[in-house]
Length: 239
Image (cartoon, rainbow, N blue to C red):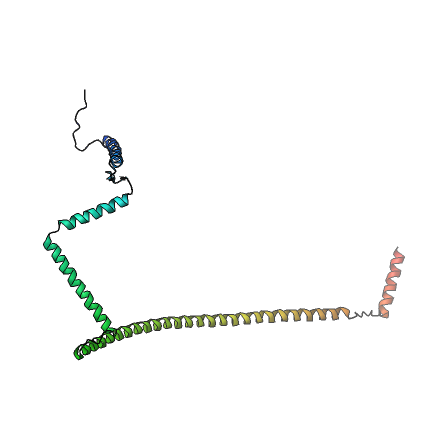
């Protein structure tokens, strides 16, 4: 019993669709390879899957196959043009060629070359063109110089402002330094004064300690001596 005929339509099941894509892609690549070998043909196959993934096969180089295809396609397109279209393109090319020649000649004349065949009027017109061109160049130059001068003035003002700010900072630092120096001087003066005071007090104490203490015993009066003698005699008698 043979296989049934497969209906060519989109497979709804994603899994079956992916399996079929993989099998038929490999089969297509095998057929292309066989065709290139058996028939000595240059074959290129490019496939994009539904997810955007690229698969390709080429019998030689895909780039050379594409270039050969573009060349053949271009020749076919040119052959398909009607005769009137070809004549129009040739006429347009001739006009462009004439314009290019005229521009080149005009450029050489403006550079001061090939002026022998010109008349007085042509030379006068050329001179007027050169004067207009020179005037335009000078105007453009003046605009560029003015713009550069304005930019330099702006940069100079910025530098001047920065210089003033730095000068203010230097003056402030100098003032702080002077104040700090004054405080240090005051602290050193107080320290020296305290040292001098301590030295002075120490010397005074040393001088006072070195002085001799003179003690003088006063002699008892006669009446007091007799009273003490009587008192002692009385105590002896009682004892």
